Length: 342
Image (cartoon, rainbow, N blue to C red; front, top):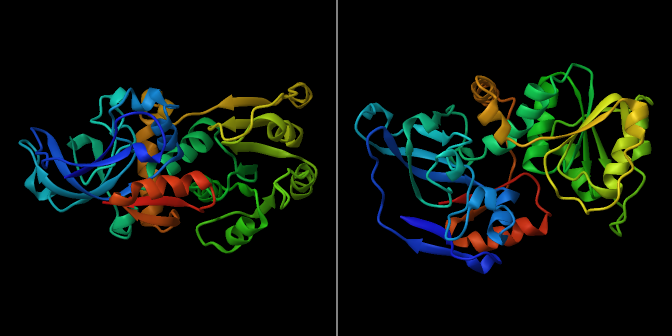
């Protein structure tokens, strides 16, 4: 099999392709021939040494999600499972959760209870694109926030895979989805993209990359009420200051990433608004969520089967071109999900 290994932290040149013998499934395990590996910003951080909680120390293989076809099964697993189209569960690739490691490889052996059979209407190159985007959004907005119909939800980084998934989930829950993106070019694409279920799209920056006063747009969209929920991977500095001033009474800012530029923040308006800033990571769902994680899997797979949830693939790269794929993701200009095709 082919596998990507990071032997030391650094740039894209540290992503090395190696050839190894094909693994064999042991008792209770399945061998998956990977057809789809969803890429995530966390893998860039891991390669650079900024996410050691996930990667550990080198050498390691990146990759937090993936899917494909069951090619072989170990003892104790029904042979009828061979040929099934499956995806890894969200916790399967994480060594700190007892998993076998990253998904950047052509073949993957995992315990059979760590795979889920997928609906027939999902293309093979999308089998590994579900959990990091949809569970991140579902876990925060449905499980933690308990979003109510009619509530306004602002979604910065709206063109990201998580942003697109969040727009679909907000609409399924009856909320009003407001996409926030940095350029008019991306905004125009989001207004016409079927996978982007935004009721409104707001441009946050001017062509020279300085931030505009988008708080006024949100006040107009919400009729002066303000935003009930921000679902945000950017929140910091001036961006977070404007979010706080854009909140509705009792509003909440959920922070699930650290993409923004660090700067001072004035939290005093939160007192007047009875608002809150809360952190969210997907790991909370599958470590502390109990049966909620199974609810998430079930609801998302039902949405996929019914055609309500569908990810936009913004780029496909052979596994051999993983360095180019990382370079493209680092530019931050793509829309949707980048996928490695083993």
